[in-house]
Image (spheres, rainbow, N blue to C red):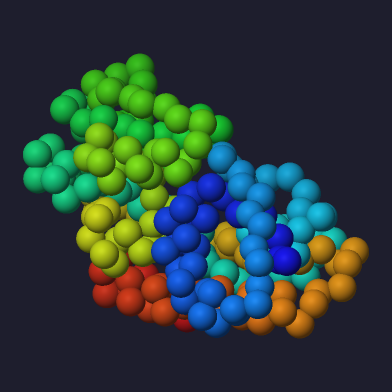
Length: 215
């Protein structure tokens, strides 16, 4: 048994589609998922692997780079065809903005006047679970902020597309972490290496689509 602490969105849109490949690679491993609906936070002490963004000087965990924190506004192809691209300097009229309850500042701080609710004419839909935010975007209900680690597969498959020409690279890294308070079993090391290799394939494939500068 290996226990993973992931966001509900990463589990839904990144890991679950890979369960067949995972089971082929690790036929004797049972998985237990501890899921976080909102922003990744909190300790990860009683799990084998987790995804978090850690401070550089955090010594409580082993950590391995998983994905850069790149945020891109995304929507479905049908929504884009019906509503056009989101103009960040505009009023947002005719658009629906989908956002996560505990990450509202991401819209407000980084996305221009379209996110100023005093003047914006966009409609807002708020959810406490980021997996639902992304599902609403895939269903054509509006524009969501897409964290690359969660939307990489959807962008490659075309179920989500960039909703504007804007993207933000925060300079932070989503990491796979393991608590130093317990031994890292060989199978856990193998799983973290497999997850990183899978993500790297997608990041390289997305470089020409999003003009990513990823080593």
